[in-house]
Length: 167
Length: 387
Image (cartoon, rainbow over all chains, first blue to last red; front, top):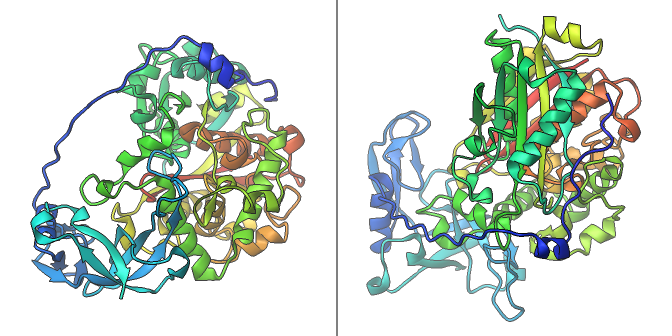
């Protein structure tokens, strides 16, 4: 058995331009119910708090808040606020937008990070952004604190935290 | 364990390209027809078909399994689509193995097809929807974020440099020069990778596999049928799959424990107790260069944190003790998601038959492993092949 001459050659940009095609620009709209656990998490964000769940069986304080512990597979026992501070577990300095378009030279770089939140069990991180910091100064292990939107502007969203900054 | 023996008896593949004029069903047909021709079978000989393809968002076609049905030869047959994100390409032959090993059929066609170029301006945008819609999507993440986050965590844990990681891209893109399906084979150097555009520090342009269109297929047969068709059957000796939590930010990103669990499942089935000694060729999934290292460790092919040193020492080159991605991998051949994983299985199949042409590794390898990875950094799919 030999696999040598494989079919298909691919289109150059010029050939692609000349190809007949049908385009569709969908405008599908969704509204996601937040459910029990994440619903409480979002309400807490609106109040300027990060909410975790506690599972008595594995003795973990887990983020984000959830209605059941996926490890013990039983309902969680309590919801409790944790600190709005944490440490940087890992980070990136991103030069592209979500759709792969490039940031302009004068736009601030995005600094996504996994932040292990103080007061939760070890390793309980969330994805968020860092701000008010020179990208070259960010380090793993850096202590950071949430910068919240003003209370009247909060909507019950993860973006009620604008970003985390070093403190 | 009561499973019937299952062999791969034929393989087919298209070229991997940035933009195919062919539709998904047309690509599926090309790969499937080649696989059946290679096996010496007709479509009427195929009893069941399993089809692997990644998220519908790339094609913009809902019910993609049904859309690809005709090209995969599935009309009026027992046909089903399987899907575990980027892990699909290795899960698809595992799924086909279930069909034959269980005795449900004697001949099963496995088809993987991906057309990413339909999503404009770039398929990267479709990845936004894999993140949690409530707690993550509002932050406008790109897929590159999580790779950059994981790569940095891995580098920090073991004190690795970007050059340590980039050597994988150099090896694989050069290996791909000998693969007839290759999209981005290039004689790149370490400096080329390190000096390529920075997308999300520490990830550069050439650390990443491209978006691709392409298809691949294999034919699986029971022992009796396989021995009738070929004197060189390649047996599926072990299969494993495992999924970790979707709360990806709460697990330590330096080590893919789910890949280890999948590998242990496959090795146990294959009777492999010392994988680093018993496995002679490997195709770990390499959508990003550090992922090959990550996966070598998860596959227990080396100690944790050792993969970069082994790569630098040439251990994983085609002429090394344990060649990894002799095909050229996703980094070199291209990454039409589901088709990539099956391309890796086909590479091990060809290597064990000593029919890999210019890519053939020396030493008459008898045992090889292919692995894929995906979903939200949480699935490992592993298949062990033996000549």
